[in-house]
Amino acid sequence: MTIVNVATPVASRSWDVLVLHGPNLNLLGLREPGIYGARTLAQIDIQLVELGISLNTTVQSFQSNHEGALVDAIHAARDRYQGIVINAGAYTHTSIAIRDAISAVQIPTVEVHLSNIYKREEFRHHSYLASIVVGQISGFGADSYYLGLQALVAHLEGLS
Image (tube, rainbow, N blue to C red; front, top):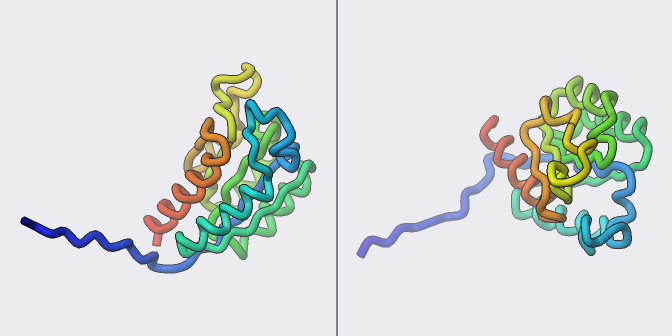
């Protein structure tokens, strides 16, 4: 019998990640739970912090219903964070400003969505962010955030 020792890999360094939540995500748990799930934004944020600890990653979250506030947060992330996870909500489909901000700061970014945007209304099928982000995860409810954080850290580890 061969025994294989499977050790948990140790991250080569720690990461700081900003999680951005766009408009109406402050209403999670109340807003259309059949589409967006029953978890609140606070619950998702707590679970992201806990997952971050296991990934040797510090997670800071920010939510705004205002496009300019999200753009400002992206700009401010430039010298502080190594990665961004963003659920831009409806701004995904309308905001060239958020797209340009992500492109300008050149921070690896993963786009996430609770629902599968490609199974919804036609206007949700286009993402202004998709062409400039590392990847996109949608349709897994709150797990989209956790999968996004894991994917982002794996990407960052591959860069180090």
